[in-house]
Image 1 (cartoon, helix red, strand yellow):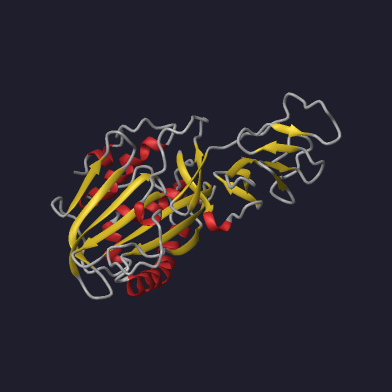
Image 2 (cartoon, helix red, strand yellow):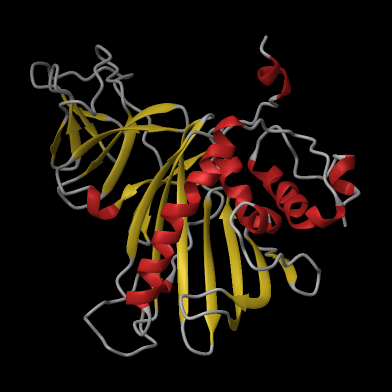
Length: 341
């Protein structure tokens, strides 16, 4: 076994809601093959406008419905023998050359939600039903009619990046302020407890990290507050607010498998600064993300990392993440993390 494999701890796919695609990518009557959480699925939009997800392989002869499948009403039709499967239940509803439908002629129907300009699918390693809902953010779900009111939210800017790493590796960045200074050249590292505060919601798996510090903007540093909120691993937002403007970055990541993930990122701001802030931040993403990808591509995952006292935000995030894996109970059993205050 290679040294890197010996050093690399296994991390399974986390439970939760994960993005499948942008809503505007999936048109009525369109069928897409989809790799999701190590599974082969078919994603389609029914004639009634609903996004649906089923297991991909037809129970008849194993045909992949995402390649050549056709939407018929609220069903998807197999391209090989034209069996039809209901998008909501996965049941076979029609076989054109046989009146009797076999009892086992069905596919798994996955739980789907659509909001915030994205289509999401629920994954749970043990097949449990959804245990919380996708948050609906007003910044990405309001009416947009060309208003010039500075307090209104502008049309989002969209961005996607493919990450050759586990979904948690990518999103640990959000709670790792030290790397922002050393890898990305930030002006300061907000590590003290008064500047960087964590809030955990009792009625949901969500957590937030608040930072009261100077916000770096295209107009220079301004006084403000930033909030990084996560609803499960790979689903979160960064909100920055000041006296003059606000902007929000929302992201959701699809785990393709345990070694690859695709992140869907969108940004909006108040109308008075979207032309400057939107372009500047996307340009910064384009410049800085490759630095992270280089790290993620060649690093290993350590289940019990050696952390120092200043790694408190990362330690807190690691403890929070445990609840999304079936083989961990969410308690902090790692002495290394327990000693970080």
